[in-house]
Amino acid sequence: MDDKHIRLLHELGFDDIDEKKMTNEYWKARAADALAITTQDRDVYGCLDHTKGEGVRIFDIEGTEYLDVTGGVAVRAFGLRYKPYLDFEMSIVDIVHELPGMDFDAIPQTLLAEKISRITPGTHKKRVVFTTSGGRAVEGCMKSAIDLSGKKRFVAFRPAFHGRTGYALALTASNSRHKYGFPQGVDVIRVAYPYCYRCPYGQNVEDCNLECVEYLRYVLQVEGDDIAAVVMEGLAGEGGLIVPPSKAVQGFYKLAKEFGAYFMGDEVQAGMGRTGKWTSMENHDVTPDYISMGKAIGGGYPMGASIGPVPMFTGPSRHSETFSAEPKMGLLSLWILKHMEDGDYLRKNAENGVYFLKLLDELKEKHEVIGDVRGMGLMIGIEFVKDKKSKEKAPKLRDTIIKNAVQRQKLWVLGAGQNVMRLTPSYIITKENIDEAVNRIDSAIKESI
Image (cartoon, rainbow, N blue to C red; front, side):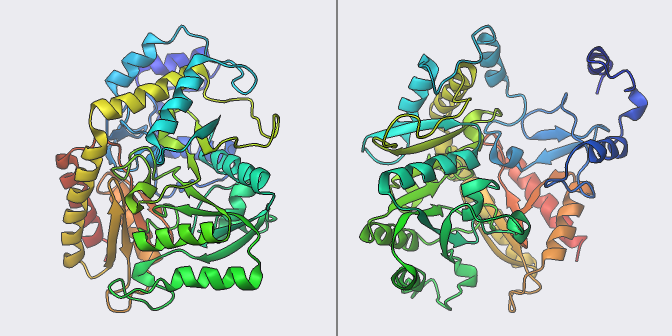
């Protein structure tokens, strides 16, 4: 951090800050003293420098450069300080930033709703509610499904991640620490997510008879079929980057329809073109009744969207929030969507994903501790095991590899599930960046086993 930015902090009233205090240990200690513990792992990650960074290059406060393959946990579609995006943001700096979008109409919000309705799957008439996060987007869809159906129970999966608050937390089941001790917001019937590498029903991909779908049928028969919606990720993110077979997703969709329930696709992490389609469900040829979106839709600002059928709610004031695609954020989101179309990023994401998976499959053949490599587009997971034959999960090894990758190989990367490394880079990643990332993962594995 240069003197200009230190002076800025002084102007904001923090006279105690100087160049000598620009160390990871100082700021990690200060953060730990001020911030409630959430998902930080300060044993692995340093303090990021908010004044530096370019594209997929990120820096900590000591000036160490990292190759970033987290994309801000799938938030930064175009990386850090993307010049065209910054130029557009500067061009709208003088507009009114806040107008109560749930109470009054404004043009950016309306145009964004129209655009999202067009790019999401299905030609049926849709309505959109904007919010400030993916979890809230999930809950908006859930409230609508309850309101329209008159039913209050949902089907969700294990593993699954839909958020950490309220109704969304009730659907989540990817880590006991997310839920332990918190009351259940709604009644949930839970079945196994289609996890072919570890099929709980002992099936093989080649001759799978969709026992997972039939088990849900049985569960509904014995527990009750009064369900508002089946809620599913088209690619399980936090639960371990699991790619379900399309025939299973289609089977769950058909079962929902058979029992008169809605089908909801959670696209908070896998949506916005990350998998090579606007939504991950399109890879499975499924058109959900509801779609929740978030993360990359806001271009680095907090935004989510609940997309559902007309009328979405039975009357006014059934749902509302203070913030709803404020004018600046609405315009920025519209710019992102158009830039993705103009730059052909859906195709690029699909092609880069194929290239990434090819190199990782080669890495899998090289290392006995890589049990599975899977993903769609730029949403990829590497599952670490004790050995390929036993498939025994190796969470401690995964943690060691990630720590080595960050601290020694300078690869900014995250985990997911119990034993998976998560790769969700920004869409501007190049094949050279991918080569570099795979080489660093290779080195991290070598130094950790």
